[in-house]
Structures are given as structure tokens and as C-alpha cells.
Amino acid sequence: MVRKVICALDTSDLKEAVTIVQRLSGYVGAFKIGHALVLPHGLDVVQRLQDVGASRIFLDLKFHDIPNSVALAVRQAVKYGVWMMTLHTAGGPAMMSAAVEEAQQSPFDVPPLLVGVSVLTSLDQHVLTDHLGIRRTIEEHLVYLSRLAVDCGLDGVVCSPQEVAAVRRALGHEGIIVVPGIRPAGAKTHDQVRVGTAQAALQDGADYLVIGRALTDCLDPQVALEALGFDVSESHPH
Ligand code: C5P
Image (cartoon, rainbow, N blue to C red; front, side, top):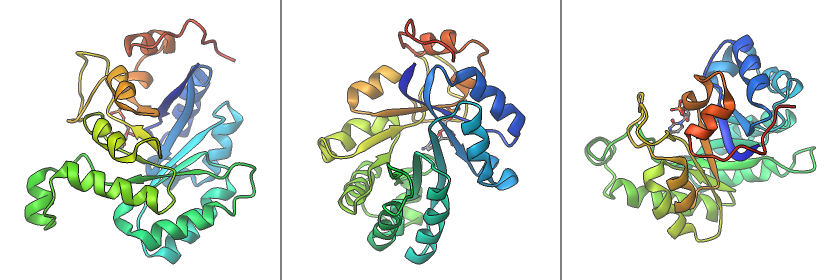
């Protein structure tokens, strides 16, 4: 079992998601679901996946709205016992604080981890500067928003492999860093631009790695994890 690995379930097909969870739940620490699965199936999908072995669910809905609306959304999500969820740091301090306060009302022993999304990897410097009017470099802005997120009480942030080191430097030991865009060395990058290997991201200070296709496209989880550089000799299915 590689606890630091979060498998991304990027499908709208619940049957397919269930099959992937059954195949991988003995090997990875958590499963990430987003709009693709929640919009057609509702939040009941959380329980459905927990029932087939996904003990930790990362709800990636990237909340971004006025504080009251985000608090209402977090209130619904915590009822389902999700382990981690995302919100946009660009929503500002009041929005993040409202989310933190709401998460603390969780009926479960451990409240969900709230992690902040800052500069989407689909944005480049030209868009940030010339269209969004932000005068910082991508890295400066990302580090600035990550620091703000942790100061507002969020448990951590999301960033690409190429930014982990800078974010870790800025946060010190505070806050967890969740990193998508992980590929085996020399593998296909698909639509991702800022990619990196699992080992480099962990060395740079990542706490959790979100991995989608490199895991879900392979029928043998052990082979997939070994290709990603993990030692899975201890792993075994339930
Ligand atoms: O298949 P792959 O490993 O590229 O999947 C990565 C997952 O991480 C997807 O669910 C994607 O939405 C998510 N993600 C990302 N880049 C970000 C934030 C999230 O790829 N910057």
C-alpha cells in the first residue's frame, strides 16, 4: 500500500469507477472524484465508493464563490465523510476562513482536510499578466496564494511537480502539498505540461501525489506503481 498516492477517478461511469476502486484499494491511500462523477451521480457516490473499498475520498470540486455559498457547499460535503476537498484560494481570506469554520463542524472524529488550488496549470505567464492583470510571476503568485491559504487555516495546497520545491520553501513544515501531473520517467505526458516523477516530487516536499492515467490505464496495479518508482512488495489487495 502506497499511502501517499491518491488515484484520480476521471470518469463519469460509476461502474468503471467501482471497478478501478476494487482493483486499486489495496494499493493506494485514497481516491479523487470530481464533477465528472458527482454531477451525474450526486454525492451518494462517496458512500458507494466507500462501500467497495475507497476508505478515503478526495472530493475535488474546487469551490469558489462568496463565503456563505462556499460554507453551505462545505456543510454538504462534510456530511458524506470525505477525507479531503479543494477550494480556490483566489476566493479570498473570508471565503477560506468560512470553509475552515464549516469543516470544523464535521460530525466525524476527524474533519476533512481542506486544500487550496492557486494558479491552474492550464494558465501561462501571458494569460496571468496580460489577461488577468497580475504583476507577479506564476511562481510568485502561486507561492503568495499558498502562504495565504495556510495562514487562513487551510490544511494545505495543490501545485504541480515543478512548483513543489518553491511552495515547500515558503510553507516550511506547515501545510500539506498535494501534487498532480505525476508520470513515470520518460512516459507519455498526455495533456499535462508541467509534469514530473513521483520521487522528485516527494523529494521536493510533496505529501500526496495525485495519479490518474498512469494507474488507471494499467490492469496490474503492482506493475503500474513499480513503473512509477514505488516499492510495492508490501502491498496486497484486500
Ligand atoms: O491522468 P493524470 O495523472 O494526468 O490525472 C491527474 C489528475 O489531477 C486529474 O484528475 C486532473 O484533473 C488533476 N489535476 C491536474 N492538474 C492540476 C490540478 C488537478 O492534472 N493542476
